[in-house]
Amino acid sequence: MASPDNLTKSLMIQTATHAYPILFGEGTLGAVDALLAPYAKGHQIVIITDDTVAGRYLAPVQTACERLDKIVHVVCVAAGEASKSFTIFQRVCEEVLAFQPDRKTLLVALGGGVVGDLTGFVASVLLRGLPFVQIPTTLLSQVDSSVGGKTAINCAAGKNLIGSFYPPKAVVMDIATLDSLPQRELLAGYGEVLKYGLLGDAAFFERLLREGEAMLAGDRALRCDIIRYCCAMKAAIVEEDEKEQGKRALLNLGHTFGHAIEKLAGYGGGVLHGEAVALGCLMAMTLSAPDVTEEEVDGLRAHYRAVGLPCRMSDLQADVVWDAGALTHACYGDKKASDGGLTFVILRAIGDATVQKGVDAARVQQIFEQYQ
Ligand code: NAD
Ligand code: GLY
Image (cartoon, rainbow, N blue to C red; front, side, top):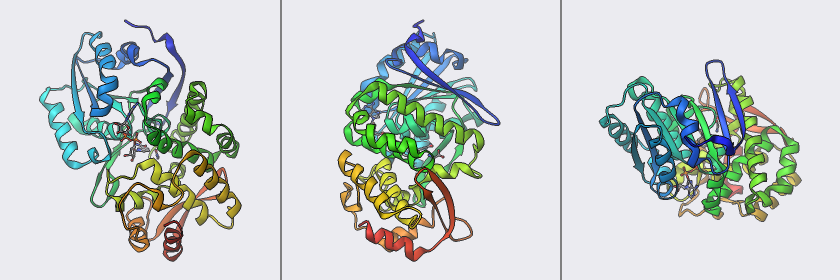
């Protein structure tokens, strides 16, 4: 069996009900058998991936799984947000059931946040719960979606409205997979990286303003360090509040604005989740005035321009009429909305987020107009 010696770092995440490791390394995919062995207790493994990731990374993962003397199956979905749908969820469930899994059958999510969220949701319902492992291959999934146990699909009413809290048995990342990630996808993930600094760590935010461009340019040591830092921040929040009864909501900074943008674009309609969140973070800073100053918003805007993140909705690659009224209306469908009012994560200062209920809809609409 291949040795996991090339694993450089790991973190444990310990919630009230579950503990699982997050393993970081370079070139780990080929040695993933050693890492998966403790969780592959049945005679079958099902790898769920998308058609882009499959072309690049399925072979080493599949070969490694076969070294465990298991029957290894593959289920492949189309790349992109549109696969987080009821139709694809049903198809994946039926394909996995056709392999006659038992409760020890391990599901392996190989891909970005779409594959991770979909596989996690499938794992949470099949036979009332199958073990699953996340192998995230995008920056966004490495810093955010693979950690914390949120699973979901989208529906007409909104994004991620159907899902469960269902933690993986382990998260195994290979930083080298980021080398093949298109720049636009890398940037979308970087939007979520900046979010961590904004919501909880001003020094980390300042560091990103200094080192973010080098990280995006491909500095692997920096990537590994920053990804691990984000995972540690997320782990600390999830350990305190796994089911989002309080503090975890802060991780949704920028998401109420962002989800409204994604909803109007149509899921898979040209706007990437991370792009929508990045723009949503700028909007949330504007909503945070006067605690956040216009100079501070301008500072982040200048960084977005320098790296290539969108600063307004017209920068997004979507053919959509950005109707501010419809966008505001979409915010009412957010999971944080309560008692019919609007709830947003805002900043008391950079690095200090809070949840604000009862936000004035007219102000939200004004911000959507301002960012057209
Ligand atoms: P994604 O899964 O669609 O991946 C982006 C694209 O990159 C896809 O086309 C994919 O095929 C391709 N790709 C993946 N890895 C690659 C690689 N190494 N090289 C080349 N191409 C590669 O998108 P994403 O940004 O990873 O995830 C977005 C999703 O994550 C959204 O649905 C969002 O709601 C969800 N999300 C979930 C959580 C959570 O806590 N569960 C948190 C944040 C986001
Ligand atoms: N990405 C938000 C969360 O995991 O809670």
